[in-house]
Image (cartoon, rainbow, N blue to C red):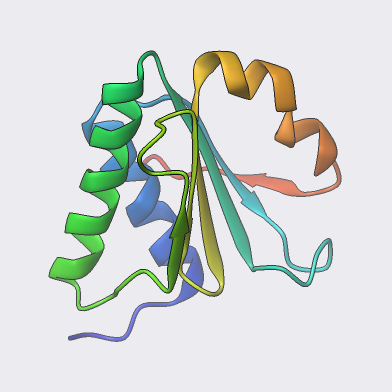
Length: 117
């Protein structure tokens, strides 16, 4: 397994989510904003099944790199799931939940990272 830095990991997560047609993918640089993680990835799916497909895609892609989730919550409900990769935290919302919680506004001081090549 090659060493991967946290920014590369965050971008790989965004690409894996994009492969499952995740909507409104945001990669936020949390360094200097929060001690929780270096990066947050926030995205959404139109249905519970799409939320679960996005989660599975992220886990599969990272496992292929030898990177395994430390903790995960909310997978079964398909409304708001969190995958914790220590320095990178992935939030996958059902679109209605994302509109309600507005995490991007909560972390408005974080710089958005361009993840697309």
